[in-house]
Image (tube, rainbow, N blue to C red; front, top):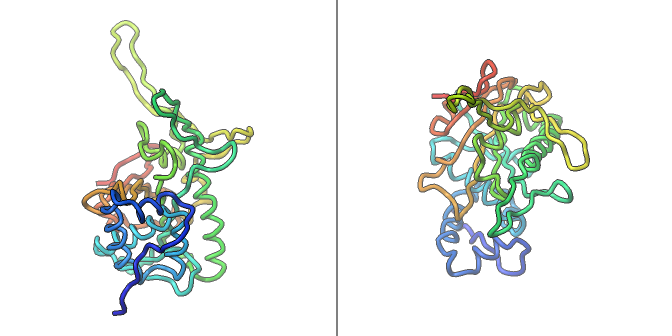
Length: 288
């Protein structure tokens, strides 16, 4: 087997995360982790992975994390020929499941999710956070259509969008319900009803929310998983991992939301170790 070159390249780069992990002594643990992961992932990576990682670093390291974690969980990866198509696919139960990785950033312009200010109480811009997830799915919907047109992805293939939210301010921490769930199903803020005489909680529920409003005034749907236009997406896999914030057991951070209207559902056993949710009869149900 040919020797694998080191992941990090010398020279200028625009991504501070890449530069810090590569150059700073106190990031040695992260550097060692990335280099070890790269040696395992390199056969599945495209020819430009190392150079592209200079910006954005988190997106390439997320692809690498998937490429190491899934085989570590007993799944066999297949890299498509050339650079087109999703990152790779797995074959389970005689079915092919494509994995498309994306790591959205904070956005641009009025839609941008601001960094929290230190030493002050910050209002979490929930709607702007949800827009980062809805945008990621919509962009990949267009790419999926192109991959279908090229014959890379088949109508009988399952498709999992693997979203890493580490670069979206506030998003890794969530609130009462993970933001990526709120982005694709009509769940709004958590509400409780209190008896005004006994002061006891008598009811609790998530308010209905089927859209969020952009700063410019237009609305964006948060019901993709109830919309036939998004039936191509079998499930969304979510994580907020990065090389400095990762579990000891790789993949323990994975959460899947299954699309109840998927044209090609993914069998839950494929991701048996992960936490998994499905929308059933207007309720969010955790799969055993």
